[in-house]
Length: 222
Image (tube, rainbow, N blue to C red; front, side, top):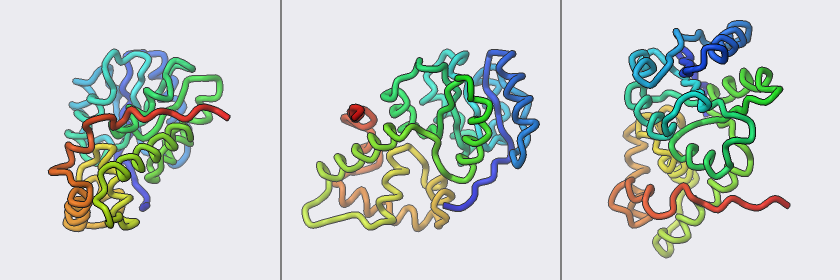
């Protein structure tokens, strides 16, 4: 995927001590975009959304569902990335998977090494990668395969590019965001989306979000 450069990082947290710690950390990190003035809530975040390229969401202090919040921020700032700060061991892999389907790109738990991990996670996400536990990625891939097994027309298969587009569609990305992520035109994205929906016997992309999508069973350890 092509390199993605954020205009700025938007910290969204109602916890002033954490906000200051993150600001101080990122101000000393190399090769990172500037930080906008921190936002204490969704209203303040959306007010600055057009200038943000990466939203840093503090799940510990934001008492709202971060999935829909991500969608609302993305509507104001298309193409933005999202990284969530979590309390250690307080968020299950199943919940991370659900949020991943909403388009959140990474998770950093606030354990004793978070200050080392956070800049690495941000840089990785800005390169177009994701920063999620392997077990979550595995569950996502298995869910995509299950969708194909259940819906794909007999005798049909997806091309490699259609497979890439499908995975981004399943994470609720718009055509414009898919275009940016894959380095192809929106017209080409629309062509692939049309082919994918036809092969999956779906009228529109909303069919991807019905049934058990996003609730794949996570594999057990071992």
